[in-house]
Structure formats: C-alpha cells, structure tokens
Image (cartoon, rainbow, N blue to C red; front, side, top):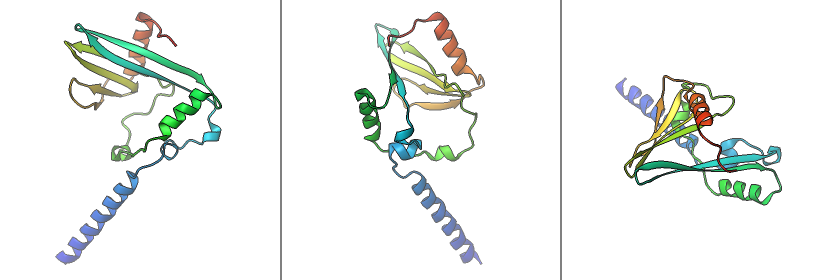
Length: 164
C-alpha cells in the first residue's frame, strides 16, 4: 500500500514538474503577447532613467509616440522585441491580487540615498515594484489600491511634461 502511495505521489510530482517546464518554456514575442502582426495599428513607448548627482535624484523621460506600421522606427522597435525569448513566470498561475487598470496609468518615484537610487513603480491597482539600492526589484501588494493613479495625478499637477 505504501508503495502505491509513493508511486502516485511521484507520478503527480512528475506531472507537475513537466507542466511547469512546459509553461515556462521559451516563447517568441508573438506567442508571449498573443498579438498578430497584421492587427497592430500603432505603438508608443516611454523610458525613464533615474540617476543621482551630488545626492539629488533626477529622472530623464523619453517618449516615442505615434509609430505606425511601415515606419522605420516601428519596424526597428518590433525587431528589438522579437530578438529575445520570453518565459512565463509560475507566479502568473496564482490568482491575481487585483484587476489591471483599464486606462494603464503608470507612475514612478525615485529617491536618492547619497549616490544610490531607490525606485517605486506603480502601474496597476494594488501592486508596486520597489527597486532598493543594490538589490533586485521586489513586488508588493499595497493597501492604497489606486496608488498608480494617485501618484500619476500628483506628478501631472506638480511636474512638467517631458519632451516628446
């Protein structure tokens, strides 16, 4: 009887491990996003680079807007994204802690600690990513579920638009 239980447990473990390996297999950009090249009508993007100079935090923002199929920058952006493989995280199989924001509001704050930089990145309700100095980025669930929108509103009211 104990042997049958051990065989059953081993079989279940083998199936779970195999499923996990299949789920996290390398995928193309198109497989990972589920997009169809022919259905894309346009794209945009932004980059934020944080830095510290003489103990003061600063950010440089770059915007890339209104790219449409056929433009050279559009093709180059897709080529850049296609030139890597994507692996799904097993964390994606867990129930989401919140639903994604319909308007995709993203906000980030950066803090200088001498010559070290700490960032707080909020891009959907209930979740932030914090990059502490000299450490990996950590995901956190937060009680202020709309922090991404609140922080973005604050930055828009008190800041200035970046150069497109």
